[in-house]
Image (tube, rainbow, N blue to C red):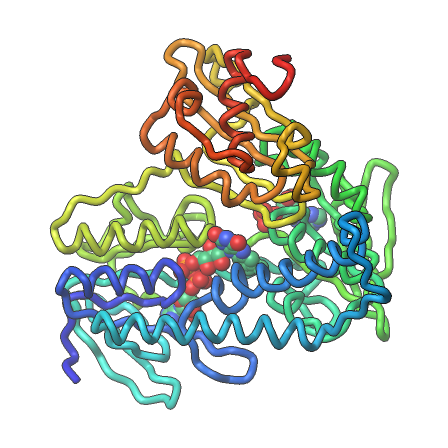
Length: 475
Ligand code: FAD
Ligand code: AMP
């Protein structure tokens, strides 16, 4: 095998592997290095997303949502099941199968595109050389015309509640519980904390979520956050806001957590504790001295708007650079960089990156929240449509939540779309496309939506922005 490549990608997660595939599609010679090993020691591509993030969490969310519906909803449909049992081991096995199918799929993609997969550690040396240390310890120095750094991120640890990997775990650990903890503590009411809290709550755990901020889901539209919080409360998620965790200690089979809130110091005891306070860029042992790549004060690799680092022909994409830590953001950066390397046009539109929280109801948004538009001073209008008025949502027994469109008064441009309700993560795609093309609410209003579909809710919300909705009161 040659030691010279047009492109070497370090990291085979959702930012790195698409960069490698696209670069190979662009007729460049490509190697992708990844060091991930699963708990059983098997090396796999796919990074956090496939092995310990997006995919396993969605697999468990799906299983537990089905259980919840069987327990609480099927009777409404006239379906009587008698007693309903569940098997955590079977859920975990199904999850593992899905993860495996996905990671094996990457190797197939590499084979099809002609990417050389290298499993082990990659380290950038000066002059775009890359030291590759295979899992068996053998070392080679490779040469590249371009290097793409896609080394991802890792869970942040709370110094006062260090992981012990048994009682105090990170999100990966919380995806792998083999039994339902009776009392589960979650630190952080962010996306990951809420998704994992939902999984174990649906399986019967008493879940307490401790969140330092006073405001729930501060990054989401205020109206959406309020609606979601109401539903989570009804589901029995005990979300305590303004609760800053100050310590956690394992005592026998329990974890004792201390936190401060408006009333002073509090103590709460759990069987397991998940620390979900965010993720930080992972760049450990990635860069030798003298590469010219700069790491910023927060640990991210510094890049310009095209994901180019301070070193010539060295690029960086995904969670290890600025911007939202989302798989689809990393993927777009990866393919854009691979196209730029090949001399093609590419650009990532950071203004229209969708965010999704896969709880029930689902939450999804793109663009600016109403609060952000208000703060910008631009005159705006809002259109809302409740899923309670959607025939399809009612037929699905999922008539909770709403669609909300925020648009400019001057030129009618859509500035943000916010959805809390059934299939919000799928529905948001239409809003993303609309905003990518700088659509106005009138464009959405004049677009025919099939009936009866959930997507009509977005159509009606756009109409409601001009108080012309047909299927709800125009308030
Ligand atoms: P990673 O996926 O972290 O991949 C980086 C890879 O590089 C890893 O395999 C790592 O081992 C390897 N690597 C690092 N350094 C080296 C080196 N020096 N040599 C060789 N290999 C190296 N995002 C979403 O968009 N949707 C979701 O639903 C979602 N759910 C999530 C749920 C959970 C529980 C978690 C934890 C995250 C979730 N995310 C989700 C976030 C998403 O997983 C990340 O944004 C995404 O994985 C980032 O992709 P990446 O390729 O930048 O990094
Ligand atoms: P995210 O960044 O979306 O993953 O969310 C992480 C959440 O954890 C944020 O809402 C933080 O406010 C919260 N958080 C961080 N540190 C603490 C802490 N010590 N106690 C409680 N919540 C915390």
